[in-house]
Amino acid sequence: MRIRVFWEGKTKDPHLRALVADYRDRIAKFTDIAIEELPEARKPRSRSVKKASPVETRMLEKMAKCTRVFLDPEGAEWTSREFALWLGDQGVHGTREIAFVVGAADGFSPAFRQHANVLLSLSRMTLTHDWTRAMLLEQIYRAFTILRGFPYAR
Image (cartoon, rainbow, N blue to C red):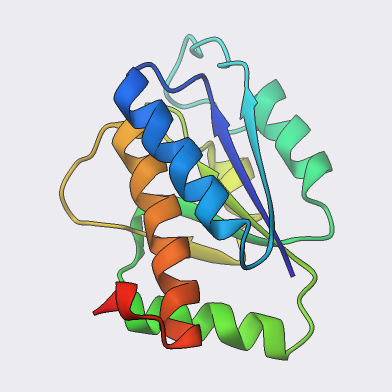
């Protein structure tokens, strides 16, 4: 199973960039992982824009054959164990690629959001996008350690 992670813009904080790199390297010991930082889309003139942005359209093309997990404040909240079990089930059921998507500051357009297989919330609290990226990767790593029975998860 391959993990793909997409987000708009670069992680600005150098400490969080290092944390993202560290967790990417840790995950790579369990499975193939690719992180794609896409250029930020221009802000729409109106919040009522219902069509996908050019960046969202590009992401959809890149993850056409993936199980798509969009991080969204309205998404399901899972414990780390529930997330690990879901991730393990994906592998057992033959999922070849899972794409995780962290949205821009304004979230996803309604047209893009409807393409999600899973809407997932990491917290009911508001997090910066840089922190969300690092936390997502930490939870993916934690899920693999739970599935393998490694002590990190305890």
